[in-house]
Length: 426
Image 1 (cartoon, rainbow, N blue to C red):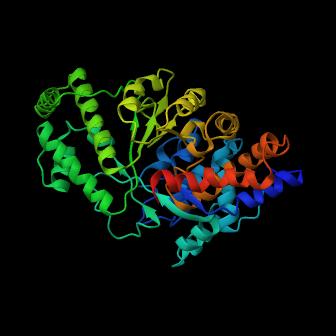
Image 2 (spheres, helix red, strand yellow):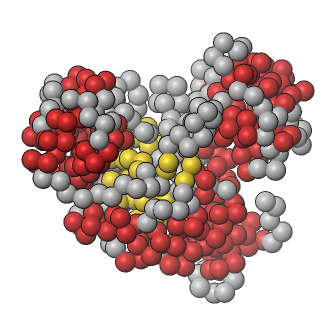
Image 3 (cartoon, rainbow, N blue to C red):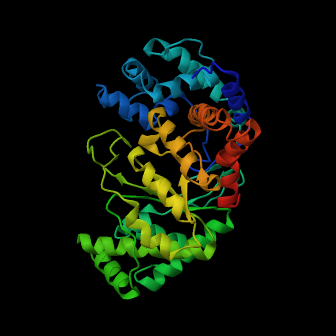
């Protein structure tokens, strides 16, 4: 986006000076930056888009040399050069790898791979990317049995991800991991409660600032009695595949997590609406989609039952944005959180951001998160949001006289930094 007016350009320049706190990512703090171009183009957006556009999955096999895998994906970029994801990659290539062209394709493979290998091998590459991006803290997605050692938890903020506990407690491997992490072989409600308390103690002692989970469209949180949860756990441990039993266990474990969020004063990030493995033969991480069945009404009992727990909410569809804005409008403990996955392109970001800014108290909005797997992606993703934010602030706030320019920048500070600091206590 090229700004043709001074106001929008000036707002954008000031917004880009705000140090970022990225409240949700999948960064591995032990290998935060990319080591090769394969790390960049291995991001599921590129593999799934290229595959959708006609590329076979053969080049994605583990036995394929990384450079040849990159070459195959680059060879298919001309089919997806209309997408936002292509623009992210082009910006990465230009910003971090010195690429000078207007378009990128298979002919650029060797030069880009060589540049990536040379630059990314520098011992301070991670710091270079962080400095260039202007990001101060990045929230992680940590498995419940992550030891949380060997990295700077002040920069890379731990977050307890709980999907396995809620939806896969019947899996012996998950129970073994829980027992190893907590020293408790949880086979009933009481033991599970003790095990979860130990996880929360461990995570909060290591600087964790949130608990998080992604949830399917048909999930409905509700309290489950100790007796019913123990009975469901026993049945699952015995190998039951009964859907009602699985749902009772999931609801009971989820409610228990919310109780611990209350006790340990952690926000509970809810990412709502994802159907796993819809495209069953899709590429890795390119199988999950949404449908229209989800409603936040399914979570009303939860929001009412835990008024002192903050729930930063992400929804998978732009069509659900109005419902999320309305719930945050009414419920003090519901916060709009970023623009997740399929909503994270300008066509949806623009109206969704505009609607939230017009409907939701400004102190209850977490403007954006990267959802990145490698540090290099934080810059192009946030740049996309910052350009959109600058335009909206100019058109909807400054030009009509609602805000001065300095007040508009203050609003951007809330969205990109200060709300995250306050809500998560960082």
